[in-house]
Length: 195
Image 1: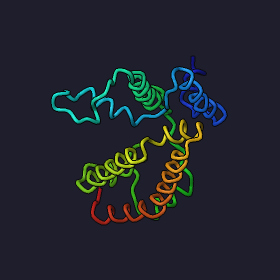
Image 2: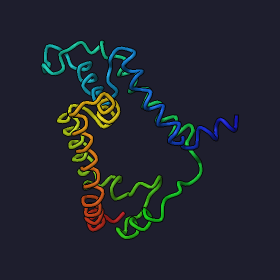
Image 3: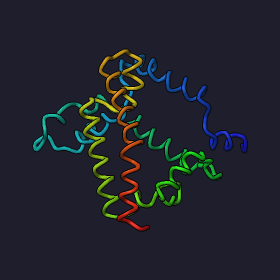
């Protein structure tokens, strides 16, 4: 039993996790030509909660045909809870020297769970930044007609050109944010917030 718990608390190597993710695509095609992604579940939840008498046409469809997707999303949330709470590794995270050097350069204190309090604390600036980030992610997901997992896993494996463009845009945006936006954002937050 201890071996199983230790195995569940350890990161899976790439040669185990990669093929499992790769097998999702033929599995989704085999069970009914379905695409793998999470963002469409937000549309399904809106369709469920919206009365049709007051509704928006975008949400007027038979969401019950997509209940498998809602079960998949629930499984992802449950899996995250199991991995992060039930089978959480009690050992501290081994951070790279490069990351610790960069955080020290920004003069950003690290809080519990390695989340910077200036970014994830309850300050109006932090809440505003998280809200703007959520709106931008939602807009990008809708504009690209899918999320990262849908385009990068299902779209690329089925050779869809729009998925290639979406993934290139996602990674370019991530690199730009990591090298230009995040350092300036951290410097700004540290100048206005003193946790």
